[in-house]
Image 1 (cartoon, rainbow, N blue to C red):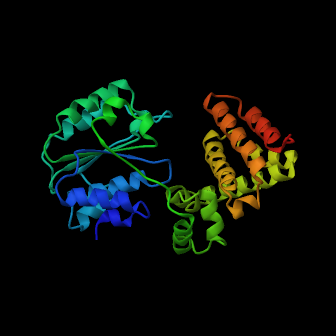
Image 2 (spheres, rainbow, N blue to C red; image 1 turned 60 degrees about the vertical axis):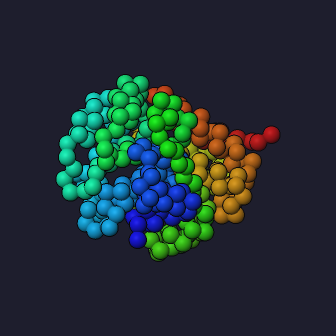
Image 3 (cartoon, rainbow, N blue to C red; image 1 turned 180 degrees about the vertical axis):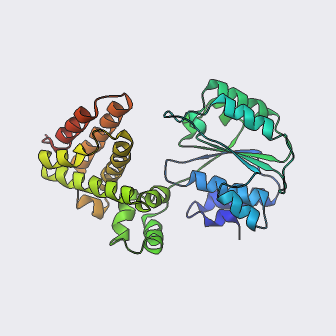
Length: 306
C-alpha cells in the first residue's frame, strides 16, 4: 500500500501522481495547492515517502514523521511566515550531498506563496537545473499566490476538501467522544486537517465552542453576550485569529445550507458574520487595538439586518 493511499478523497490526484511515480514519469517539481486544512502538506509527505521508499518500512515512517535526513524542509519563519533566502540557499547546498539510504532526496517547501523575490530566485536557480534524483515538493494555499517563475517550473495539482460524510466518518473513528461528528464535519466543511488540529487540543475545542456560542449570540442579536465571549480574545491575537477562522467556517457552512450550521445561524446573518470576521482579521493584522476590534465585531455580528 502506498503512503499516498492514506490521503482521504482526491482520488484522481492520487491516481495521477502514483501512476506517474511508478512509471518513472513524475516531474522533478510538484506544486500541491489547497486551502488550509485540506491536506496539501500531508499529501506532500506521503508522496515524499513513496518516492524515497516505495517499499515502505521505517524510512517511509520517518519521512511521514518529519524525521528523515533525505527529506529536507523549507518553511516560513517569524510572525510573517516568510520563507527566507538564507534557508533556501542552505538547502540548495545540501541537496548536492549524497543521500544517506534512499534512492534520492526530497525538498519539501511549505508555503510557496510566502516566498519573497530573493528566495524565489534562489529556488529558481536549482529548479532550472535540478540535481539527479531530487524531487521538489511545494505546497501553497493557492496557485495564484505563487510567483509565475516558480509555477512555470512545476506540475500543479489542486486538492479539495473531502465530503462531509467522509469527514464525519473520520471524526467518529478518531474522536469517538465527540457528541455529533456530522455537526462537526459540517462546520469544518470537509477540511480534515483543520478538524483534527482543532479537536485534538483542549484550546482548539474551547475555541470551537466559543465560535458556536458567538453564532448563537449573533442570531439572537445579543450584543452583550457576544462581547462576553469575545472579551477573552482582546489580548491574544493568535487565539483570536484561530477562533475567528472557526467562526468563519460556521458562517460558510450556513451559507452552503448545512442544517447543523443553520440551526445556529441563518444565511443572512451568516453573510453578515463572514464580512465582519474578514474585517476584524484585517484590523488584527494591521496591529489594530484588540479590545476595539472585538467590540466592533460584537456590534457588527448583532446589528439589525435591513
